[in-house]
Each structure stands twice: as C-alpha cells, then as structure tokens.
Image (cartoon, rainbow, N blue to C red):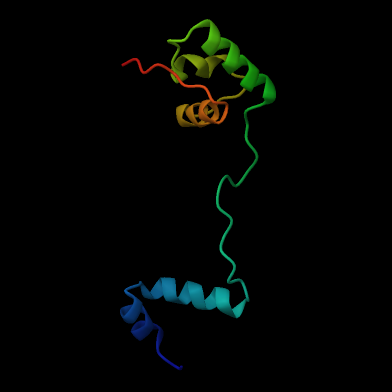
Amino acid sequence: RGESQASVARRFELGERTVRRFKRRRDRDELAPHKTGPRSPTKLTPADNQLMREQVARTPGITALQLRPMLSVEVAECTICRRLKKLGLSLKKSR
C-alpha cells in the first residue's frame, strides 16, 4: 500500500524495528513461523534418564538439586525438572 513503516507500527501498535524485521523477512520470503522448542539437542543421556528413575524410586524425597551432581553432565535445575516430567516422575517438594 505504500504506507510508511512508522504508520504501520502505530496502526498495529508495534515498534518500528519490529515492522522492519517483518518487512525484511517478507522480502526474503521467510514468512513461515520460527521453529519453537530447544535449539540444540539435549545434554541428558538415556543413562541419565535411567539414573533419575532409579534415584526417585530409591529415595522418593530426593530433590532436583540433589540429583544434579549425579548426572553425567552439568545442567540447570529446571532442565532436570522438565526431564522428570517427561519421564512421568514427580519429586516431593522439600523446602
């Protein structure tokens, strides 16, 4: 339509930089949504999954922080919690 980027930004309540970014993506024909989820493969191995299953079965009151040093790689506590959820395991909350 020939509208300026500033007027488009005001109309859709966006920043001008966002409008420029969308325009650049349109010009490159990259209008498909960006992939969501993890950008790289997980660090946790199947052996780590098995270790977590065993530890939770052996010690139901274990925390994610206590599991952390037992794993083969160093990961954040939230990574452990997400993996436990994926494995169908839950931890007792102890604070």
